[in-house]
Image (cartoon, rainbow, N blue to C red; front, side):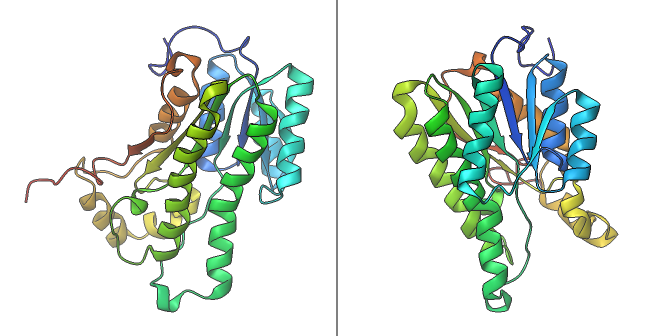
Length: 254
């Protein structure tokens, strides 16, 4: 058994596409899938880093702008044509912005929506066209879309849309066996979060917010994503899975 998601190889399932596959969480998901023998296609904007990650895993890769609907559709169509079918797709593209609404510029807001909600919509749109024989789509929301956290106004709005998108698309595509779920992490130690995690006071405050007493690791999130991608979880759809150290549901001891 690998990572608690069964011991059968994924090699025969079809291709698994990781959009944002060069990032901290995306590359961790790709590594775990590779351990299961999955056929991988990675996509991201930054070509050099993308090629490094893909090369280390023996994965195919394609640089794309994930906000481009047509580019994402071509990505999935190409994977299906090359490998027979797409068994799963993850949208691991995202951003972090910590500002109150009154200090958030129009450009800040539009960029946050584009990076988080538009990319998610582009992925499920493409999956709806290409994955006609079922499979799994995994999106990323945030704990801030489930509980009110100060200064998360724009990101909560964008990721709240992702949560709603996952539930609606799960209903739309259930009849064809296409599952759509989202993961809602707490703070995770990634390069994207370095501005928070590099500050000792901020890091300690963040740890204290999470009842389990630590922030998340990329492997915490990757394990959940791979569980949702696994055909063994074929009766799970329309869920927003909190992987947040208990932040959204648990109150620690005072």
